[in-house]
Each structure stands twice: as C-alpha cells, then as structure tokens.
Image 1 (cartoon, rainbow, N blue to C red):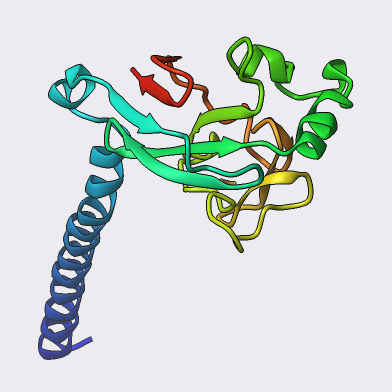
Image 2 (cartoon, rainbow, N blue to C red):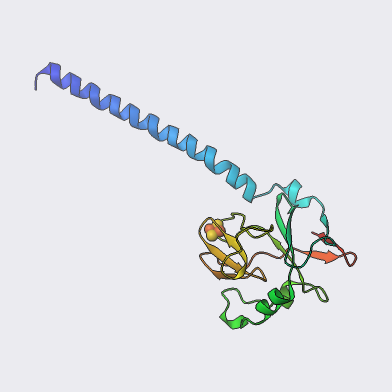
Length: 183
Ligand code: FES
C-alpha cells in the first residue's frame, strides 16, 4: 500500500471505532431509558411502601365480577367468586399445584368468595387480564397474563405458563362485612 492509501485505511478504522463507540453509548442510554420506568415501577420507594392502607368497598361486586383497585401504586384485584368458581378451586388436588395453597388459605374465614390478590404476574410483573367483565380469563377461569401466557385459576393460583408463584395475596382484613382494608 502506498502511504496515501494506508492513510485512508487508518482514517477509516478510526472512524469506525468512533462510530461503534457512539452506537454503544446510544444503546446504553436508550437501554437505561427503557429499563428505568420498569425498575421504578417494580421497586416502589420507601415512602410508597410506608404509605398506609387502601380501603375497598366490596358491596357492589357481584359473584363472577372483579374490580381493579390500587395498592402501593400497583394493581389490586378484588374478585367475588361464584359458587361454581369456588367449587372449581376446591376440586383441585393441592399437591398437583406448582405453588400449593388451598382457596381457604388464600381467603379469610367466612369470606371464601372474596379473592384479593395483587394484579401483578409473578413471572415478570405484567398485569394479568380477567379483572373486568369481558376480559380473557384464561384456561383455568381466573386470570391470564398476555405477556408470556401464564394462566391462573379461580383462586389466583398459577396453573400453566412460566410464572413461578400464585398471584400474591396482600395483607388485608375485613373492617366490616363489606369493606376491606388492605395493608
Ligand atoms: Fe406474565 Fe410473563 S409477565 S407470563
């Protein structure tokens, strides 16, 4: 190579290096911009965690209906089960479950028709469907996560798909027959 063409080659390499570095930096910044909201959503600040409870009046929820509330900035599903949904949940052999729990263990005494769970898929945190009339409820009649196809049953227990755990039941209590206090 003549000194002239070698010079061009060197210059070309230097430019490519610069462009690669620029591309990596942009990807890094772009990646952070995408990841940050997810992280901030998944890890509520201490203030939010310390914030007091959420009250939900369940009197208007008919059997087979569910509503979405918010608890600690995350969706909360409040669902009144039908007798058929209760029977379906109780008919399952607990030993066959990935995360074995009975409906009784997931509800309060005398209120096994009220299922209170976080509306956060235990796989990667999407919001499952089934907390409003007309939404897809999945193969087991409870909730269905559209992100990667996890199916939860009428007790909110994981039955199929990648999620490792049942939908979380938060701390809550009935402060009257019709009002629950979560948290
Ligand atoms: Fe629900 Fe992946 S986040 S299946």
